[in-house]
Amino acid sequence: MSTYVYGIARSSHPSLPEELGGVGNPPRPVRVIAHGSLAALVSDAPEDLRPKRRDLLAHQTVLAEAGASGPVLPMRFGGVSPDDASVVSVLGEREGHYLERLDALDGKVEYNVKATHNEEAVLHQVLAEDPQLRAMSEANRASGGGTYEQKLALGERVVAAVKAREARDAVLVQQALEDATADVCAGPESTGWLANISFLVDRDASHAFVDAVDQLRREQTHLVLQVNGPLPPYSFVE
Image 1 (tube, rainbow, N blue to C red):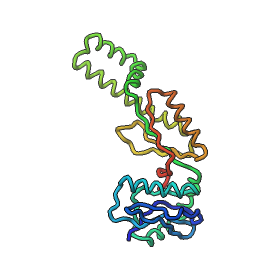
Image 2: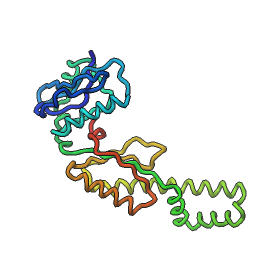
Image 3: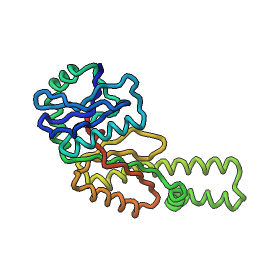
């Protein structure tokens, strides 16, 4: 049977809670495969594994329970190995790398911050910052909206100005928060966000990071910030 992998810890990691259930319906019992200085947290993999809410939560719960008593390298949902022997082989091959990552992530959690603009607020800002753009807008409004060509020209200028502001604000978000973190990892780009950034934060300093986010909200009211965390440090594990 295939082996589902939740994460990797040191072989000296404290025991998991008894009868900890993992993915599957009914939940597969979570067990530990130890090899040398490392251990993998695994269960049998269900044949019909899908990213259902029940299984996503089970994956998160296993990592939360294990991570509460020591560092764990979290695997993303859906990590399936052909069998236990394959897991043991990888633990042996990459022992040095995994031990280095466990040391680096000890006592740390991940916060993901996504940022977008309050459209009305940022429009006011770009008009205030660009006298020529503001003059074009006022001229169109004074003439009853302007001709089609005038509206098109104004729209193109506004779009360009907003995109330039998005690029600057993406840098601003990272610079405003990175001093309170141990590491930073840019997430995949998306048309829905001007910034998608994961921050590695000392668990004991989580409150300072959250305070930094709140301060950024107060200072940059045109930004809409979505914060998710604390999470297992997925973005900082290869």
